[in-house]
Amino acid sequence: MHRDLRISVTDRCNFRCTYCMPEEGMPWVPREEILSFEEIERLARLAVERFGFDGIRLTGGEPTVRAHLPVLVERLARLDADLSMTTNGATLRSSAADLRAAGLRRVNISLDSLQRDRFQELTRRDELDHVLEGIDAALEVGFDPVKINVVCMEGVNDDEIVDFADFGRERGVEVRFIEFMPLDGGHTWERAAVVPGERIVAIIDAVHPLLPVARNHEPAALWAYADGRGRVGVIPSVTEPFCATCDRVRLTAEGRLRACLFSLEETDLRSLLRGGADDDAVAAAMVSCVAGKWAGHGIGTVTFVQPPRTMSQIGG
Ligand code: SAM
Ligand code: SF4
Image (tube, rainbow, N blue to C red; front, side):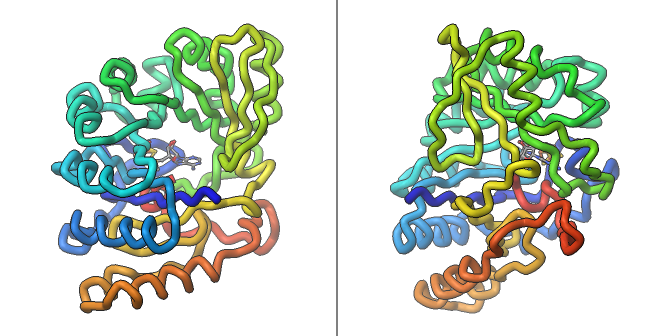
């Protein structure tokens, strides 16, 4: 069975995406409270060696703003797990080669508009060209695959669905449309802003006929272009929750383990590490965190409560 550990290596970010962070940013966690590379490596090693995690994804905040990231990548690449990263791509043109050389195998790059003005509105940064250069750099240095994450929002960027499909087909990258989730800094999320994955697939299929790909452990529903020019996916976390098969655990930058994106409770592993706990004690805390995993996130039900953390503080 596949198991995925998502590690936020920093809570800081060079963007301020409207669907993720407030314009003024978040109160950053003080540096001394952020896990060191040694601490991250120890927890990742426990996850892989004791619990059979076979996927590790670096995320943030924006992972590339963490100083000396290739040093961490080199350490984690020695573990027996598939190592990947989710990034906004803005600085990849200068860091892709070092990250690839350090052992990073693949990247997901977030990009929500191919239009400069809209990109700037959405990220509050005028960096579209840099992100496009970052995608080129990722392909050039041999990350494989390079995937593009698009958060699709009603009335915001849903008119670019076919443009993104064309972009993926032309550049040889797999585009994955993510349903907008209630993890935004402004707490403005509403169900009406979610573009259902089913609709996204229908819009693309009408222009470029699609064939379903058999589902594996991934939350993405994948489709192959009938003409053989690659694949496209949707991650319908809101309209078709995949909680029953979710195999992800998240570690925040300050060392708190979260069993679910929407968890209201966390397990403080940093205190254990810094208090001198041995591996057995840390592993036991990991087990009890995951044992408390809920049956489902319940978005749209009366009992749903948006967690106080934003997506930038969880990592996606
Ligand atoms: N900064 C990096 C980036 O943007 O790729 C990594 C962290 S970001 C929080 C991880 C992923 O979460 C990105 O693909 C982003 O688009 C997605 N995301 C952020 N807020 C979201 C929301 N409210 N709903 C759905 N996806 C969201
Ligand atoms: Fe930063 Fe990524 Fe959140 Fe955008 S989605 S604000 S790039 S953490």
